[in-house]
Amino acid sequence: MGAFLVEGARRLQGTVQVSGAKNSALKLMVAALLGHGAFGLDNVPRITDVYTMAGVLESLGARVNLDGHRLAIEVNSLQGHTPEHLVKSMRASVQVMGPLLARLGWVEVALPGGCAIGRRPLDIHLSGLQQMGASITLNGERLLARAPRGLRGADITFRYPSVGATENIMMAATLAKGETVIRNAAREPEIADIQAFLNAMGARIEGAGTPVIRIRGVGELGSADFAVMPDRIEAGTYLLAFLITGGEGSVCGVCPDHFSPLLNAVRSMGGEIAAEGDEVYIAAPKKLRPCAVVTSPYPGFPTDLQPQLAAAATQAQGRSELKETVFDQRFGYLSELRKLGAVVRQRGQTVAIYGPTRLKGTRLQAGDLRAGAALVLAALAAEGRSLVQGAQHIDRGYEQMEHKLQALGAQITRVELGEGGHAQ
Image (cartoon, rainbow, N blue to C red; front, side):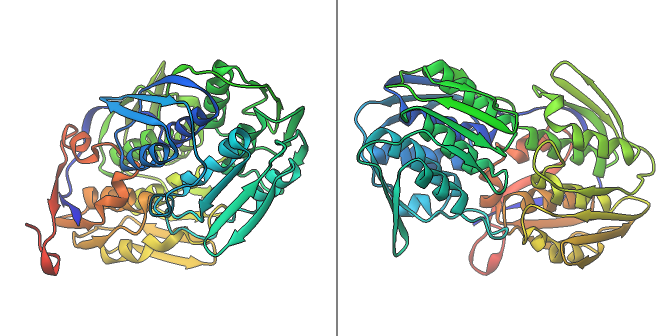
């Protein structure tokens, strides 16, 4: 297993280029299954989740090739059985349900895996597909959905603005008979990216980015070329890396409006922020002020940046408070922060962090993608050496994180661990 070896207490400076958005690229890859012909996706991040999704698409009959950051996909005939070992390793693969059901009239998919950050039920996805005329049965660890006469438009109200369900139903509705309306839809920028891609393929969708999305079904979809939007979570992670190390620098190739809640939080902590065009400059203050943040669906503060902000809060003067409302097991990383010396107290879904704390390097274990990023940030601020195990989690969503941090002055290297957990 891989790990990151970090020599901390070094101030980061410089400029970092943000990669394409993981949470857009994966769904655009799936959306291609609705069409026919040759697709070209640019600005695709070279992360393990993209390679996993490429394996899913190839198993379904598509041809996929990643050359640099351009992904070529060729879609002609497809089949609806998904590979269990790939689906169980990545939750986003459940998104093939809507497109394959709309395209083929049936799909069989294994129950998905992914990060262990709490309950992430599929009932909103399944209820929406059933309202569109699908019959769904569970056979052990596999879901079988059928719509032999095709899906039909429906007026669907979500009990919660689920990102995955919004994307799944929106994609399924592109080939359904009649009009589908999704109410209480998720509003994330990645959904607008998918709408633009599908419309370029010939779909008729409007409203992405608002609580109501309308889709008028069409007979078939073609192909399109498209560029993936920048990754707002990666951008936020590097901004917080500058902040936690007392550094300054810029993140480039971003859409600042997509992560304004983080920019507001950093300003409240005393950080200097300047956003111009596709670049955000940050300068950390001499003394960080504490913060108070509640995560919520977009346009609120993103849950995917909560662990990284918690790491930064260990260096603030006083008591910070973070409340998690999206995932019920997102605080699994707290025990690892405590190993570094952080003073944190959890009560239910709220955590108090007391600082500033002199963190001291130690051996850490990343349990999921964003927790892993948070532990790397904490290790960058800690005195001495830290070993962050579980690099495979971080690789799922961050392209060459160690190289980007090295360019900013961090002393971080990737190592392989042999028997007994010793670096080789």
